[in-house]
Image (cartoon, rainbow, N blue to C red; front, side, top):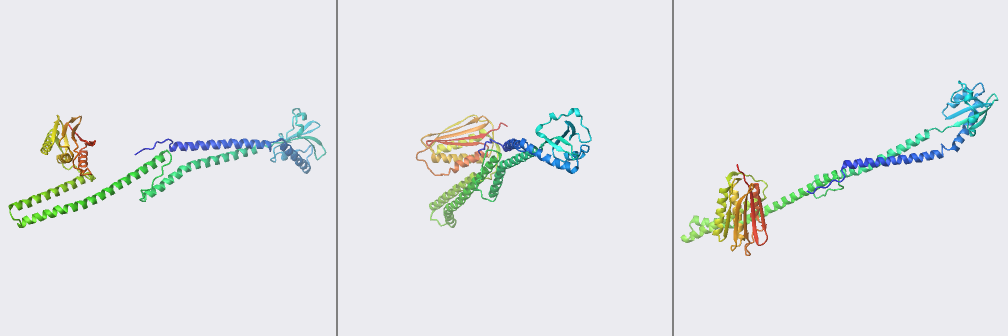
Length: 440
C-alpha cells in the first residue's frame, strides 16, 4: 500500500491557524487603536472642542454661583460644583491674589506666594462676578480625560478578539468539515457500499487515515472479487467434473456389469473388458488428482498432517533417482548432478513426491526429447537447492492452460517454508526449488 507523505501535520496546522488568527487580531487591534487615537485627537481632544466645553462649563458656573449665592467669604458651594464629575480645574483671583483653587478646596487657604495670574493660560480666563458683587479673574480648565481613550482600547480589543475567534473557527472548521465528511463516507462503507471512494484531501494525518481507509476498501473489494471468481471457478469445476466423470463411470459400470454377469464370448473379450475398465479407472483417477490439486492450490485451509523430520540426502537420492529413471524410460536424456547434501528436512514426503510427479508430467508434455534435461541438487547455505532445466519442444502439448500442476508445486513448496521459481523464455524452461535445511 502506498503511504502518503505527511507534509503538514494536524497539530502544525492548528498552531498555524492560531498564529495566523493571533497576528490578524493583533494587526486589527493596532490599526483600530491608531485610527481611534487619530479620531480622538481630531474631536474630543482637539483644542476647539476643549475651548467649547470650557465656555459651556463657565456658563454653568455663573448660573451655579448665582443660585448658591457664592460670596467671597462663602466658597463652599464651589467645592461641590468642582467635584460633581466634570473634569474641571478652577482657580479664582481677586486683585491678582488667589482666592480659590479647586485642588485645595475652600477649607484650605492657598499660599499666595505660589500663585500668580500671569502664570495662567490667558485663553482660559473668564470674568466671574460673585453674589456679593466681587469681580474675579477666573481661570477654568476643562479636561476631556482618558475615558474616551479607554473606550477605544476596549472597542479595538473586542474587535481583535472577534476577528481572532472568527478566523480561527473558520480555519479549524475546514478540518472539522472534512472529519464529518469522512464519518459520512465511513457510514456509507459500513452500509455495504464498498464501491464508494473515500475522499483523500491534503497531506496530514487525516489524509493518511482517509488513504488507509480507501486502500482497505480496495483490498476488501479485491478479496471479494477473488472469492467471487473462485466461487464461479469452483462451480464450473464441479459442473465440468460431474460431466466428465459421468462418461468413464458409465463405461466402467457397464464393463463391470458385463464381467459380473459373465456376458463375454471368450477369454480375449474378457481381457478387453478388463483393459477398458482399467483405462476408465485411470481416467477417473486422473480427474480426482486434478480435483485434489485444484483444492490444494485454492483452498485457504490446509494442514501439515504428516510432517516429519527426514534425512535430506536419502530423500533427494530416492526422488531424483526415481524420476531420472522414469524420464529416461520415456525417451529423455537426463544429466543428474547431485552434490553433497547434509542436513534434515521437516517435510511431508508424499507431498514432495507429488511435486516431482507434477514436474515429471510437465516434462513429458512440454520437454524436447532431443535435448538434454539437466537436474542439479546441492546444499546452498541453509537451504536445499534443486534446479531442473530443459528445452521446450516445438511440437509439445499445449493443454493445462491454467498451469494447475505448477501452481500445486508452488503451494506445496511454500507450505514447507521454501520458494518455487519458474523461468521460461519460450525455448527453455527452468524450475528452482529452495527448501530450508536444519543441522539438528
